[in-house]
Image (spheres, rainbow, N blue to C red):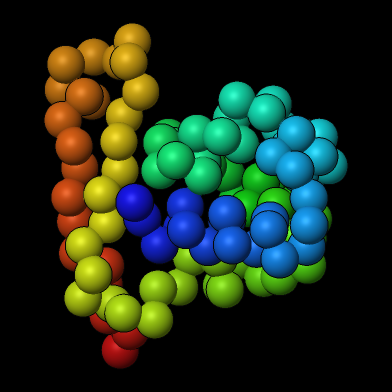
Length: 97
């Protein structure tokens, strides 16, 4: 799982909301939210990240800034996408200068 997915789930549980409730408040479908929590995402807009953070009572930075920058980020691509997109993407998070 990715830090982002883990932080979404932890923040949602901390505020005591269901996936459906968070999704509704953030203007997402429950399926989209479930995908985010399971590490499946493609092109999440910054406006969506800010709305999610607002609903969860946190900041975008807290949701995405992994305190362990050497940890690898793995993103799964859902079924139905091109064979190129189906590869598991593995990158190292950039360290701050």
